[in-house]
Image (cartoon, rainbow, N blue to C red; front, side):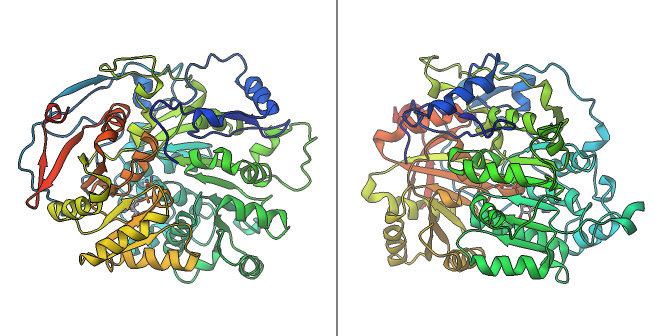
Length: 573
Ligand SMILES: Nc1ncnc2c1ncn2[C@@H]1O[C@H](COP(=O)(O)OP(=O)(O)OP(=O)(O)O)[C@@H](O)[C@H]1O
Protein backbone atom coordinates (compact mmCIF):
# COMPACT_ATOMS: atom_id res chain seq x y z
CA UNK A 1 0.00 0.00 0.00
CA UNK A 2 1.41 3.36 -0.94
CA UNK A 3 1.07 6.21 1.50
CA UNK A 4 0.39 9.65 0.18
CA UNK A 5 2.82 12.32 1.20
CA UNK A 6 1.53 14.00 4.27
CA UNK A 7 0.40 10.85 5.93
CA UNK A 8 1.45 10.78 9.49
CA UNK A 9 3.29 7.85 10.97
CA UNK A 10 1.84 7.05 14.27
CA UNK A 11 2.88 4.59 16.82
CA UNK A 12 -0.14 3.25 18.52
CA UNK A 13 0.10 2.29 22.12
CA UNK A 14 -2.02 -0.21 23.85
CA UNK A 15 -1.89 -2.09 27.06
CA UNK A 16 -1.34 -5.75 26.37
CA UNK A 17 -2.96 -6.72 29.60
CA UNK A 18 -3.85 -5.18 32.88
CA UNK A 19 -0.46 -6.14 34.28
CA UNK A 20 2.09 -5.53 31.59
CA UNK A 21 2.25 -2.95 28.89
CA UNK A 22 3.54 -3.16 25.43
CA UNK A 23 3.64 -0.97 22.45
CA UNK A 24 1.83 -1.68 19.29
CA UNK A 25 3.23 0.66 16.78
CA UNK A 26 3.62 1.04 13.08
CA UNK A 27 3.91 3.60 10.40
CA UNK A 28 0.20 3.57 9.94
CA UNK A 29 -1.61 6.02 7.76
CA UNK A 30 -3.80 8.34 9.74
CA UNK A 31 -7.04 6.94 8.41
CA UNK A 32 -6.20 3.52 9.84
CA UNK A 33 -6.12 4.89 13.33
CA UNK A 34 -9.73 4.46 14.25
CA UNK A 35 -8.88 2.32 17.21
CA UNK A 36 -11.23 0.54 19.52
CA UNK A 37 -12.14 2.71 22.47
CA UNK A 38 -10.37 0.41 24.89
CA UNK A 39 -7.13 0.79 22.99
CA UNK A 40 -7.50 4.55 22.90
CA UNK A 41 -8.14 4.50 26.61
CA UNK A 42 -5.01 2.48 27.23
CA UNK A 43 -3.06 4.71 24.97
CA UNK A 44 -4.01 7.67 27.08
CA UNK A 45 -3.44 5.74 30.25
CA UNK A 46 -0.01 4.61 29.22
CA UNK A 47 1.15 7.96 27.97
CA UNK A 48 0.30 9.26 31.40
CA UNK A 49 1.45 12.79 32.00
CA UNK A 50 4.22 12.71 29.43
CA UNK A 51 4.05 15.54 26.94
CA UNK A 52 4.35 13.72 23.70
CA UNK A 53 4.95 16.03 20.82
CA UNK A 54 5.67 13.48 18.18
CA UNK A 55 5.01 9.85 18.78
CA UNK A 56 6.55 8.86 15.50
CA UNK A 57 9.75 10.72 16.03
CA UNK A 58 12.59 8.39 16.74
CA UNK A 59 15.39 8.49 19.19
CA UNK A 60 18.95 8.51 18.09
CA UNK A 61 22.15 9.41 19.74
CA UNK A 62 22.75 12.09 17.18
CA UNK A 63 19.46 13.64 18.12
CA UNK A 64 20.26 13.27 21.78
CA UNK A 65 23.50 15.07 21.44
CA UNK A 66 21.95 17.58 19.08
CA UNK A 67 25.29 18.46 17.65
CA UNK A 68 25.15 17.33 14.09
CA UNK A 69 24.69 19.53 11.10
CA UNK A 70 23.79 17.95 7.86
CA UNK A 71 24.42 19.27 4.42
CA UNK A 72 23.55 17.39 1.35
CA UNK A 73 23.97 17.95 -2.33
CA UNK A 74 27.64 18.66 -1.82
CA UNK A 75 30.03 17.45 -4.41
CA UNK A 76 31.19 14.47 -2.46
CA UNK A 77 29.23 12.31 -0.08
CA UNK A 78 26.71 13.60 2.40
CA UNK A 79 27.90 13.99 5.94
CA UNK A 80 26.65 11.04 7.89
CA UNK A 81 24.60 11.90 10.92
CA UNK A 82 25.72 10.04 13.96
CA UNK A 83 26.65 6.38 13.64
CA UNK A 84 30.08 5.01 13.01
CA UNK A 85 32.25 5.22 9.96
CA UNK A 86 32.33 2.13 7.81
CA UNK A 87 34.76 -0.41 9.05
CA UNK A 88 38.14 -0.03 7.43
CA UNK A 89 38.45 -3.78 7.31
CA UNK A 90 35.41 -4.13 5.12
CA UNK A 91 36.19 -4.71 1.51
CA UNK A 92 34.68 -2.51 -1.15
CA UNK A 93 32.52 -3.93 -3.88
CA UNK A 94 33.45 -3.25 -7.42
CA UNK A 95 30.78 -0.71 -8.32
CA UNK A 96 32.28 2.07 -10.33
CA UNK A 97 29.56 4.23 -11.82
CA UNK A 98 30.66 6.06 -14.90
CA UNK A 99 29.79 9.59 -13.85
CA UNK A 100 29.93 12.13 -16.62
CA UNK A 101 28.77 15.12 -14.65
CA UNK A 102 28.27 15.77 -10.98
CA UNK A 103 26.88 19.12 -10.23
CA UNK A 104 23.93 18.83 -7.93
CA UNK A 105 23.05 21.97 -6.12
CA UNK A 106 23.89 22.18 -2.45
CA UNK A 107 20.84 22.35 -0.24
CA UNK A 108 20.93 22.80 3.49
CA UNK A 109 19.12 21.01 6.19
CA UNK A 110 19.87 21.35 9.84
CA UNK A 111 19.16 19.03 12.69
CA UNK A 112 18.51 20.89 15.90
CA UNK A 113 18.23 19.17 19.24
CA UNK A 114 15.38 16.72 19.24
CA UNK A 115 15.63 15.01 22.58
CA UNK A 116 17.14 15.75 25.91
CA UNK A 117 19.36 13.46 27.92
CA UNK A 118 19.02 13.83 31.66
CA UNK A 119 21.95 11.60 32.57
CA UNK A 120 24.28 9.20 30.87
CA UNK A 121 25.99 6.03 31.97
CA UNK A 122 29.68 6.39 32.31
CA UNK A 123 30.95 4.76 29.20
CA UNK A 124 33.98 2.58 29.38
CA UNK A 125 36.14 3.87 26.54
CA UNK A 126 37.92 0.56 26.25
CA UNK A 127 34.58 -0.89 25.17
CA UNK A 128 35.01 0.65 21.76
CA UNK A 129 38.67 -0.03 21.25
CA UNK A 130 38.30 -3.80 21.08
CA UNK A 131 40.28 -5.10 18.16
CA UNK A 132 39.51 -8.74 18.62
CA UNK A 133 36.83 -11.00 20.02
CA UNK A 134 39.27 -12.04 22.78
CA UNK A 135 39.26 -8.49 24.14
CA UNK A 136 35.47 -8.65 24.41
CA UNK A 137 35.79 -11.55 26.83
CA UNK A 138 34.17 -14.20 24.65
CA UNK A 139 34.93 -17.77 25.71
CA UNK A 140 37.84 -19.55 23.95
CA UNK A 141 35.69 -22.25 22.33
CA UNK A 142 33.45 -19.62 20.78
CA UNK A 143 36.46 -17.64 19.55
CA UNK A 144 37.86 -20.80 17.96
CA UNK A 145 34.62 -21.33 16.08
CA UNK A 146 34.57 -17.69 14.95
CA UNK A 147 38.13 -17.97 13.69
CA UNK A 148 37.26 -21.14 11.81
CA UNK A 149 34.52 -19.17 10.07
CA UNK A 150 36.99 -16.42 9.19
CA UNK A 151 35.60 -13.98 11.75
CA UNK A 152 38.39 -12.36 13.73
CA UNK A 153 37.42 -8.73 14.27
CA UNK A 154 34.21 -7.45 15.82
CA UNK A 155 32.30 -4.66 14.11
CA UNK A 156 31.72 -1.47 16.09
CA UNK A 157 28.19 -2.36 17.14
CA UNK A 158 29.45 -5.79 18.23
CA UNK A 159 32.20 -4.17 20.31
CA UNK A 160 29.59 -2.05 22.05
CA UNK A 161 26.82 -4.63 22.46
CA UNK A 162 28.68 -7.78 23.50
CA UNK A 163 30.00 -6.49 26.88
CA UNK A 164 26.67 -4.83 27.68
CA UNK A 165 24.62 -7.97 27.04
CA UNK A 166 27.22 -10.04 28.90
CA UNK A 167 26.67 -7.75 31.89
CA UNK A 168 23.04 -8.90 31.75
CA UNK A 169 21.54 -5.59 30.74
CA UNK A 170 18.33 -5.51 28.79
CA UNK A 171 19.30 -3.73 25.60
CA UNK A 172 18.01 -1.96 22.54
CA UNK A 173 20.56 -2.32 19.74
CA UNK A 174 20.42 0.26 16.96
CA UNK A 175 22.91 0.44 14.15
CA UNK A 176 22.73 0.95 10.43
CA UNK A 177 21.77 -1.84 8.06
CA UNK A 178 24.49 -4.38 7.37
CA UNK A 179 26.62 -3.42 10.39
CA UNK A 180 26.56 -6.87 12.02
CA UNK A 181 23.72 -6.61 14.54
CA UNK A 182 22.92 -10.34 14.32
CA UNK A 183 26.25 -11.44 15.79
CA UNK A 184 26.09 -8.50 18.21
CA UNK A 185 23.33 -10.33 20.08
CA UNK A 186 24.13 -13.94 19.12
CA UNK A 187 27.69 -13.97 20.45
CA UNK A 188 26.89 -12.94 24.06
CA UNK A 189 24.03 -15.45 24.05
CA UNK A 190 26.29 -18.24 22.80
CA UNK A 191 28.78 -17.24 25.50
CA UNK A 192 26.16 -18.19 28.09
CA UNK A 193 24.37 -21.18 26.62
CA UNK A 194 25.27 -24.23 24.56
CA UNK A 195 28.50 -26.11 23.94
CA UNK A 196 30.66 -23.02 23.33
CA UNK A 197 29.71 -21.21 26.51
CA UNK A 198 31.93 -19.77 29.20
CA UNK A 199 32.48 -22.36 31.90
CA UNK A 200 31.42 -21.26 35.36
CA UNK A 201 31.64 -22.74 38.84
CA UNK A 202 27.96 -23.67 38.74
CA UNK A 203 28.30 -25.64 35.56
CA UNK A 204 28.23 -29.03 37.21
CA UNK A 205 25.01 -28.20 39.02
CA UNK A 206 23.32 -26.31 36.20
CA UNK A 207 19.91 -27.91 35.97
CA UNK A 208 18.66 -25.78 33.11
CA UNK A 209 17.22 -27.70 30.25
CA UNK A 210 14.93 -26.84 27.41
CA UNK A 211 14.85 -23.73 25.31
CA UNK A 212 17.08 -20.97 26.67
CA UNK A 213 16.81 -18.37 23.94
CA UNK A 214 13.93 -17.33 21.71
CA UNK A 215 14.69 -15.14 18.71
CA UNK A 216 11.74 -13.63 16.87
CA UNK A 217 11.93 -12.19 13.34
CA UNK A 218 9.11 -10.83 11.17
CA UNK A 219 9.77 -12.90 8.04
CA UNK A 220 10.62 -16.51 7.23
CA UNK A 221 13.63 -15.43 5.21
CA UNK A 222 15.07 -13.42 8.06
CA UNK A 223 14.30 -16.25 10.51
CA UNK A 224 16.07 -18.77 8.29
CA UNK A 225 19.00 -16.43 7.83
CA UNK A 226 19.42 -16.11 11.60
CA UNK A 227 19.20 -19.90 11.96
CA UNK A 228 22.00 -20.29 9.40
CA UNK A 229 24.11 -17.76 11.30
CA UNK A 230 23.64 -19.70 14.57
CA UNK A 231 24.35 -23.02 12.84
CA UNK A 232 27.50 -21.56 11.32
CA UNK A 233 28.81 -20.58 14.75
CA UNK A 234 27.73 -23.80 16.50
CA UNK A 235 29.37 -25.93 13.81
CA UNK A 236 28.08 -29.07 12.09
CA UNK A 237 28.06 -31.29 15.18
CA UNK A 238 25.88 -29.02 17.28
CA UNK A 239 23.65 -27.33 14.75
CA UNK A 240 20.64 -29.33 15.91
CA UNK A 241 20.70 -27.13 19.02
CA UNK A 242 18.99 -24.40 17.03
CA UNK A 243 15.52 -24.98 15.64
CA UNK A 244 13.63 -22.87 13.13
CA UNK A 245 9.94 -22.28 13.79
CA UNK A 246 8.93 -20.24 10.78
CA UNK A 247 5.52 -20.08 9.17
CA UNK A 248 4.89 -21.78 5.83
CA UNK A 249 6.85 -24.87 6.85
CA UNK A 250 5.39 -28.12 8.15
CA UNK A 251 4.32 -27.51 11.72
CA UNK A 252 4.19 -31.14 12.85
CA UNK A 253 7.74 -31.66 11.65
CA UNK A 254 8.85 -28.63 13.63
CA UNK A 255 7.10 -30.01 16.72
CA UNK A 256 8.74 -33.39 16.25
CA UNK A 257 12.15 -31.76 15.88
CA UNK A 258 11.57 -29.83 19.11
CA UNK A 259 10.85 -33.09 20.91
CA UNK A 260 13.71 -35.02 19.36
CA UNK A 261 16.53 -32.46 19.25
CA UNK A 262 15.75 -30.53 22.43
CA UNK A 263 17.11 -27.27 20.99
CA UNK A 264 18.55 -24.56 23.21
CA UNK A 265 17.69 -21.80 20.77
CA UNK A 266 14.56 -21.36 18.69
CA UNK A 267 14.27 -18.80 15.93
CA UNK A 268 10.97 -18.09 14.29
CA UNK A 269 8.17 -15.87 13.15
CA UNK A 270 5.66 -14.58 15.74
CA UNK A 271 2.69 -16.57 14.41
CA UNK A 272 4.41 -19.95 14.37
CA UNK A 273 6.14 -19.51 17.72
CA UNK A 274 2.96 -18.52 19.50
CA UNK A 275 0.95 -21.24 17.71
CA UNK A 276 3.30 -24.02 18.84
CA UNK A 277 3.61 -22.50 22.28
CA UNK A 278 -0.18 -22.32 22.65
CA UNK A 279 -0.39 -25.96 21.55
CA UNK A 280 1.85 -26.89 24.48
CA UNK A 281 4.72 -28.15 22.30
CA UNK A 282 7.15 -25.33 23.06
CA UNK A 283 8.12 -24.55 26.62
CA UNK A 284 9.86 -21.25 27.07
CA UNK A 285 9.24 -20.51 30.73
CA UNK A 286 12.86 -21.17 31.65
CA UNK A 287 14.14 -19.09 28.79
CA UNK A 288 16.96 -16.67 29.56
CA UNK A 289 16.99 -14.58 26.42
CA UNK A 290 14.27 -13.07 24.27
CA UNK A 291 15.45 -11.27 21.13
CA UNK A 292 13.11 -9.30 18.87
CA UNK A 293 14.95 -8.70 15.60
CA UNK A 294 13.41 -5.88 13.51
CA UNK A 295 11.59 -4.93 16.71
CA UNK A 296 9.85 -1.88 15.25
CA UNK A 297 8.10 -4.13 12.76
CA UNK A 298 7.35 -6.85 15.32
CA UNK A 299 5.63 -4.34 17.59
CA UNK A 300 3.32 -3.21 14.81
CA UNK A 301 -0.39 -3.77 14.96
CA UNK A 302 -0.24 -6.82 12.65
CA UNK A 303 1.63 -8.96 15.14
CA UNK A 304 0.00 -7.74 18.35
CA UNK A 305 -1.68 -10.97 19.49
CA UNK A 306 1.25 -13.26 18.79
CA UNK A 307 3.74 -10.85 20.28
CA UNK A 308 1.55 -10.47 23.34
CA UNK A 309 1.68 -14.20 23.92
CA UNK A 310 5.43 -14.37 23.37
CA UNK A 311 6.13 -11.47 25.71
CA UNK A 312 3.90 -12.95 28.38
CA UNK A 313 5.32 -16.47 28.26
CA UNK A 314 9.00 -16.36 27.35
CA UNK A 315 11.17 -16.41 30.45
CA UNK A 316 8.28 -16.62 32.84
CA UNK A 317 8.81 -19.55 35.14
CA UNK A 318 5.87 -21.94 35.42
CA UNK A 319 4.30 -21.46 38.78
CA UNK A 320 4.78 -17.71 38.58
CA UNK A 321 1.23 -16.56 38.58
CA UNK A 322 0.14 -13.17 37.40
CA UNK A 323 -1.02 -12.65 40.96
CA UNK A 324 2.51 -12.96 42.28
CA UNK A 325 3.37 -10.19 44.59
CA UNK A 326 6.04 -8.72 42.32
CA UNK A 327 3.83 -9.01 39.27
CA UNK A 328 5.40 -8.03 35.99
CA UNK A 329 8.68 -7.14 37.64
CA UNK A 330 9.16 -10.74 38.70
CA UNK A 331 8.48 -11.85 35.18
CA UNK A 332 10.92 -9.47 33.66
CA UNK A 333 13.68 -10.66 35.88
CA UNK A 334 13.46 -14.16 34.43
CA UNK A 335 14.77 -13.17 31.05
CA UNK A 336 17.02 -10.70 29.31
CA UNK A 337 15.18 -8.84 26.58
CA UNK A 338 17.14 -7.61 23.56
CA UNK A 339 15.44 -5.43 20.95
CA UNK A 340 17.18 -4.90 17.63
CA UNK A 341 16.63 -2.80 14.53
CA UNK A 342 18.28 -0.32 12.24
CA UNK A 343 15.28 1.93 12.89
CA UNK A 344 14.32 2.49 16.51
CA UNK A 345 11.36 4.82 16.93
CA UNK A 346 10.64 6.29 20.34
CA UNK A 347 7.79 3.81 20.87
CA UNK A 348 10.38 1.01 21.07
CA UNK A 349 12.37 2.91 23.70
CA UNK A 350 9.18 3.28 25.69
CA UNK A 351 8.36 -0.43 25.35
CA UNK A 352 11.87 -1.43 26.38
CA UNK A 353 11.63 0.79 29.44
CA UNK A 354 8.42 -0.86 30.52
CA UNK A 355 9.80 -4.40 30.18
CA UNK A 356 13.39 -4.13 31.11
CA UNK A 357 15.45 -3.56 34.18
CA UNK A 358 18.26 -1.11 33.61
CA UNK A 359 17.72 -1.21 29.86
CA UNK A 360 20.24 0.62 27.70
CA UNK A 361 20.36 1.86 24.15
CA UNK A 362 23.44 0.45 22.44
CA UNK A 363 24.72 2.04 19.29
CA UNK A 364 28.01 1.57 17.53
CA UNK A 365 29.95 4.02 19.67
CA UNK A 366 27.68 4.71 22.58
CA UNK A 367 25.63 3.27 25.38
CA UNK A 368 22.82 5.32 26.94
CA UNK A 369 20.47 4.31 29.76
CA UNK A 370 16.91 4.35 28.46
CA UNK A 371 15.64 6.18 31.54
CA UNK A 372 17.64 9.17 30.44
CA UNK A 373 15.81 9.50 27.15
CA UNK A 374 12.88 11.83 26.76
CA UNK A 375 10.46 12.12 23.87
CA UNK A 376 12.17 13.75 20.92
CA UNK A 377 10.73 16.86 19.35
CA UNK A 378 10.03 16.75 15.63
CA UNK A 379 13.04 17.92 13.68
CA UNK A 380 12.45 20.13 10.68
CA UNK A 381 14.60 20.61 7.68
CA UNK A 382 15.62 24.25 7.24
CA UNK A 383 14.38 24.33 3.69
CA UNK A 384 10.85 23.32 4.54
CA UNK A 385 8.22 25.69 3.30
CA UNK A 386 5.60 24.55 5.74
CA UNK A 387 7.05 23.49 9.07
CA UNK A 388 3.67 22.32 10.26
CA UNK A 389 3.57 19.57 7.71
CA UNK A 390 4.51 16.28 9.36
CA UNK A 391 6.03 15.01 6.13
CA UNK A 392 8.71 17.69 6.40
CA UNK A 393 10.14 16.27 9.60
CA UNK A 394 13.49 14.57 9.43
CA UNK A 395 12.94 10.88 10.14
CA UNK A 396 15.90 10.41 12.41
CA UNK A 397 15.38 6.65 12.81
CA UNK A 398 15.60 6.22 9.04
CA UNK A 399 18.54 8.63 8.78
CA UNK A 400 20.55 6.59 11.26
CA UNK A 401 19.78 3.32 9.56
CA UNK A 402 21.41 4.30 6.27
CA UNK A 403 24.88 2.89 5.72
CA UNK A 404 27.33 5.74 5.16
CA UNK A 405 28.73 4.27 1.97
CA UNK A 406 25.58 4.55 -0.17
CA UNK A 407 25.02 6.76 -3.21
CA UNK A 408 21.39 7.70 -3.89
CA UNK A 409 19.88 8.75 -7.24
CA UNK A 410 16.48 9.09 -8.81
CA UNK A 411 15.60 8.88 -12.45
CA UNK A 412 12.41 9.92 -14.21
CA UNK A 413 10.76 7.41 -16.50
CA UNK A 414 7.30 6.76 -17.91
CA UNK A 415 5.66 3.71 -16.32
CA UNK A 416 5.82 1.71 -19.54
CA UNK A 417 9.56 2.38 -19.94
CA UNK A 418 10.63 1.55 -16.38
CA UNK A 419 12.04 -1.87 -17.22
CA UNK A 420 14.16 -0.39 -20.01
CA UNK A 421 15.40 2.30 -17.64
CA UNK A 422 16.21 -0.43 -15.13
CA UNK A 423 18.26 -2.30 -17.73
CA UNK A 424 20.13 0.84 -18.79
CA UNK A 425 20.81 1.65 -15.16
CA UNK A 426 22.25 -1.81 -14.48
CA UNK A 427 24.51 -1.55 -17.53
CA UNK A 428 25.65 1.99 -16.78
CA UNK A 429 26.55 1.11 -13.19
CA UNK A 430 27.94 -2.28 -14.19
CA UNK A 431 25.98 -3.73 -11.31
CA UNK A 432 26.26 -7.49 -10.87
CA UNK A 433 23.82 -8.27 -8.06
CA UNK A 434 20.67 -6.19 -8.17
CA UNK A 435 17.57 -6.14 -5.99
CA UNK A 436 14.59 -4.35 -7.59
CA UNK A 437 11.67 -3.48 -5.33
CA UNK A 438 8.03 -3.15 -6.33
CA UNK A 439 4.98 -2.64 -4.16
CA UNK A 440 2.67 -5.34 -5.51
CA UNK A 441 3.18 -8.97 -6.35
CA UNK A 442 1.38 -9.23 -9.69
CA UNK A 443 3.58 -6.96 -11.82
CA UNK A 444 6.78 -8.68 -10.59
CA UNK A 445 6.32 -11.50 -13.11
CA UNK A 446 5.98 -9.07 -15.98
CA UNK A 447 9.22 -7.30 -15.07
CA UNK A 448 11.08 -10.62 -14.80
CA UNK A 449 9.66 -11.71 -18.17
CA UNK A 450 10.75 -8.47 -19.87
CA UNK A 451 14.25 -8.62 -18.39
CA UNK A 452 14.71 -12.25 -19.39
CA UNK A 453 13.42 -11.46 -22.89
CA UNK A 454 16.22 -8.91 -23.16
CA UNK A 455 18.82 -11.40 -22.03
CA UNK A 456 19.16 -10.40 -18.40
CA UNK A 457 18.90 -13.25 -15.88
CA UNK A 458 16.17 -12.33 -13.42
CA UNK A 459 13.93 -14.01 -10.89
CA UNK A 460 11.09 -13.09 -8.57
CA UNK A 461 10.64 -13.40 -4.80
CA UNK A 462 7.36 -12.74 -3.00
CA UNK A 463 5.00 -14.14 -0.40
CA UNK A 464 2.86 -16.07 -2.89
CA UNK A 465 5.71 -18.51 -3.43
CA UNK A 466 5.94 -21.48 -1.08
CA UNK A 467 8.67 -21.66 1.54
CA UNK A 468 10.77 -24.07 -0.50
CA UNK A 469 10.50 -21.99 -3.67
CA UNK A 470 11.44 -18.86 -1.71
CA UNK A 471 14.57 -20.38 -0.24
CA UNK A 472 15.57 -21.89 -3.60
CA UNK A 473 15.19 -18.54 -5.36
CA UNK A 474 17.19 -16.79 -2.68
CA UNK A 475 19.96 -19.37 -2.74
CA UNK A 476 20.26 -19.18 -6.53
CA UNK A 477 20.35 -15.39 -6.38
CA UNK A 478 23.04 -15.45 -3.69
CA UNK A 479 25.00 -17.98 -5.75
CA UNK A 480 24.99 -15.58 -8.69
CA UNK A 481 22.67 -17.59 -10.95
CA UNK A 482 20.50 -14.50 -11.40
CA UNK A 483 21.64 -10.94 -11.82
CA UNK A 484 18.36 -9.33 -10.78
CA UNK A 485 15.98 -10.24 -7.97
CA UNK A 486 12.61 -8.58 -8.47
CA UNK A 487 10.79 -8.54 -5.16
CA UNK A 488 8.46 -6.68 -2.82
CA UNK A 489 8.57 -5.43 0.77
CA UNK A 490 9.14 -9.02 1.92
CA UNK A 491 12.84 -8.65 1.17
CA UNK A 492 13.28 -5.13 2.50
CA UNK A 493 14.26 -6.04 6.05
CA UNK A 494 17.20 -8.02 7.26
CA UNK A 495 17.97 -9.82 4.00
CA UNK A 496 21.73 -10.20 3.75
CA UNK A 497 23.15 -10.60 0.26
CA UNK A 498 26.62 -9.15 0.82
CA UNK A 499 27.36 -8.89 -2.93
CA UNK A 500 24.30 -6.76 -3.67
CA UNK A 501 25.74 -3.64 -5.29
CA UNK A 502 22.56 -1.98 -6.53
CA UNK A 503 19.06 -1.48 -5.13
CA UNK A 504 16.36 -0.21 -7.46
CA UNK A 505 12.98 1.18 -6.45
CA UNK A 506 10.74 0.40 -9.41
CA UNK A 507 7.84 1.62 -7.27
CA UNK A 508 8.23 4.29 -4.63
CA UNK A 509 8.56 2.97 -1.09
CA UNK A 510 5.68 3.90 1.21
CA UNK A 511 7.79 6.18 3.39
CA UNK A 512 11.33 7.06 4.35
CA UNK A 513 11.62 4.17 6.83
CA UNK A 514 10.73 1.71 4.06
CA UNK A 515 13.17 3.51 1.75
CA UNK A 516 15.93 3.10 4.32
CA UNK A 517 15.35 -0.63 4.84
CA UNK A 518 15.21 -1.28 1.09
CA UNK A 519 18.35 0.81 0.55
CA UNK A 520 20.09 -1.17 3.28
CA UNK A 521 20.13 -4.33 1.17
CA UNK A 522 23.21 -2.85 -0.49
CA UNK A 523 26.29 -1.26 1.05
CA UNK A 524 26.52 -4.12 3.59
CA UNK A 525 29.36 -3.97 6.11
CA UNK A 526 30.97 -0.87 4.64
CA UNK A 527 30.85 -2.01 1.02
CA UNK A 528 29.91 0.46 -1.67
CA UNK A 529 26.33 0.48 -2.87
CA UNK A 530 24.01 2.49 -5.08
CA UNK A 531 20.27 3.09 -4.71
CA UNK A 532 18.29 4.28 -7.72
CA UNK A 533 14.62 5.21 -7.54
CA UNK A 534 12.90 5.09 -10.92
CA UNK A 535 9.78 7.21 -10.75
CA UNK A 536 7.34 9.09 -12.94
CA UNK A 537 7.54 12.84 -13.37
CA UNK A 538 4.49 13.32 -11.15
CA UNK A 539 6.14 11.40 -8.31
CA UNK A 540 9.34 13.39 -8.03
CA UNK A 541 7.95 15.53 -5.22
CA UNK A 542 7.68 12.36 -3.11
CA UNK A 543 11.37 11.63 -3.71
CA UNK A 544 12.25 15.18 -2.68
CA UNK A 545 10.21 14.80 0.51
CA UNK A 546 12.01 11.58 1.33
CA UNK A 547 15.31 13.26 0.60
CA UNK A 548 14.49 15.86 3.23
CA UNK A 549 13.30 13.28 5.73
CA UNK A 550 16.40 11.19 5.22
CA UNK A 551 18.79 14.16 5.01
CA UNK A 552 20.79 12.51 2.23
CA UNK A 553 21.38 13.65 -1.33
CA UNK A 554 19.12 11.72 -3.69
CA UNK A 555 20.40 13.17 -6.94
CA UNK A 556 18.44 13.39 -10.16
CA UNK A 557 20.06 11.40 -12.95
CA UNK A 558 19.54 9.62 -16.24
CA UNK A 559 21.23 6.79 -18.03
CA UNK A 560 22.35 7.56 -21.55
CA UNK A 561 24.87 5.89 -23.83
CA UNK A 562 25.78 3.43 -21.13
CA UNK A 563 26.62 6.14 -18.63
CA UNK A 564 25.20 7.64 -15.48
CA UNK A 565 24.49 11.30 -16.06
CA UNK A 566 23.84 13.26 -12.85
CA UNK A 567 21.73 16.41 -13.22
CA UNK A 568 21.74 19.67 -11.47
CA UNK A 569 18.65 19.79 -9.28
CA UNK A 570 17.51 23.06 -10.86
CA UNK A 571 17.67 21.52 -14.36
CA UNK A 572 14.78 19.27 -13.45
CA UNK A 573 12.65 21.72 -11.45
N1 LIG B 1 32.69 -9.32 12.79
C1 LIG B 1 32.38 -9.60 11.54
N2 LIG B 1 33.36 -9.83 10.62
C2 LIG B 1 33.05 -10.10 9.33
N3 LIG B 1 31.78 -10.17 8.85
C3 LIG B 1 30.77 -9.96 9.72
C4 LIG B 1 31.02 -9.66 11.10
N4 LIG B 1 29.84 -9.49 11.71
C5 LIG B 1 28.89 -9.67 10.77
N5 LIG B 1 29.44 -9.95 9.58
C6 LIG B 1 28.72 -10.16 8.30
O1 LIG B 1 28.16 -8.89 7.93
C7 LIG B 1 26.95 -9.08 7.21
C8 LIG B 1 25.86 -8.17 7.78
O2 LIG B 1 25.54 -8.60 9.08
P1 LIG B 1 24.04 -8.57 9.64
O3 LIG B 1 23.11 -9.23 8.68
O4 LIG B 1 24.08 -9.06 11.02
O5 LIG B 1 23.75 -7.00 9.60
P2 LIG B 1 22.54 -6.20 10.27
O6 LIG B 1 23.15 -5.02 10.94
O7 LIG B 1 21.72 -7.12 11.09
O8 LIG B 1 21.74 -5.72 8.98
P3 LIG B 1 20.14 -5.40 8.82
O9 LIG B 1 19.86 -4.17 9.62
O10 LIG B 1 19.97 -5.19 7.36
O11 LIG B 1 19.42 -6.60 9.33
C9 LIG B 1 26.63 -10.55 7.29
O12 LIG B 1 27.02 -11.15 6.06
C10 LIG B 1 27.50 -11.06 8.42
O13 LIG B 1 27.86 -12.43 8.27
